[in-house]
Length: 103
Image 1 (tube, one colour):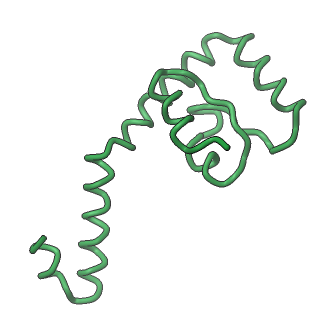
Image 2 (cartoon, rainbow, N blue to C red):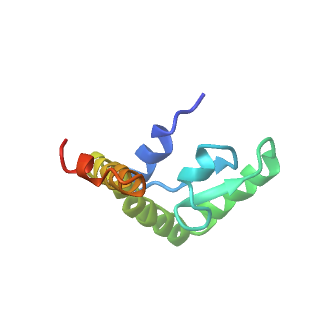
Image 3 (cartoon, rainbow, N blue to C red):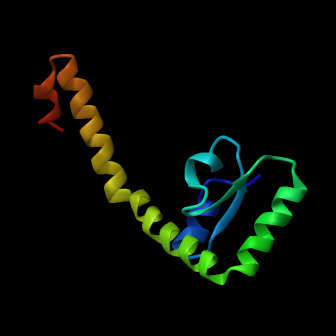
């Protein structure tokens, strides 16, 4: 089984990612922007995606560049800030804003 870190690691290194449209991977790969998504269990689709990557090096470079930019969103400090903001919003919705300012 491939964990979610593998496509993120590949994106961080500037490599385009080819994956199947399954939960988890479909959330991490923006098809046509950071990689290529295809239906599961379709070897013909995989072969076509590989042909595209090898036939158009500029596509590979662009997907890799976009992936490197996308992976920055998964930096732990950004993830923590987004979670804290979400918790603050949820507390505010429930009239408990004062709890958000007292960690």
